[in-house]
Image 1 (tube, one colour):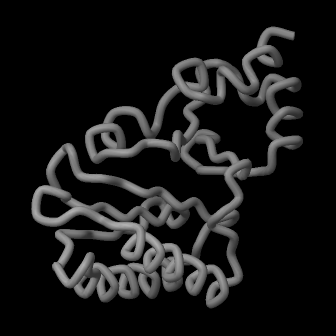
Image 2 (tube, helix red, strand yellow; image 1 turned 180 degrees about the vertical axis):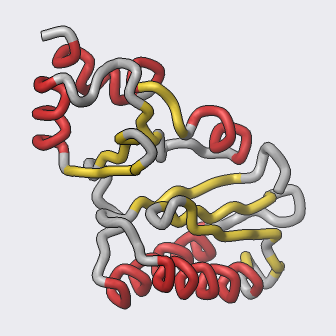
Length: 159
């Protein structure tokens, strides 16, 4: 995928098992191999990272994703949610690195972790708002102080 390829990151509210990740990877592979926009095959790829994140990528140099094709991908994610009993659309389900482990929780619990010092400005957080492969590679896993988390929760870090 080119660095300018468009990216969508969906985060599960729980870690997936290895078997679930493989099943979802197979589903993403099948979907992206047949993903069309106005009858044109999209140069697309999907992947499961860290048994928690589902990532779709489209190299729009060949054909751009359209409203209808994006709707189809959202439909796929909703189908995956239902099949695996996970939530992929909770934007305040926040993920961070807790040592080698990736953890996630809701907004209130995250605020408590900041207040207790378990999460600080150097904690690696996941910025699922990245929009390109270049951003995925350089701005997805970043320190709290370099992410949108700083703007939302920064006042709690030094309280």
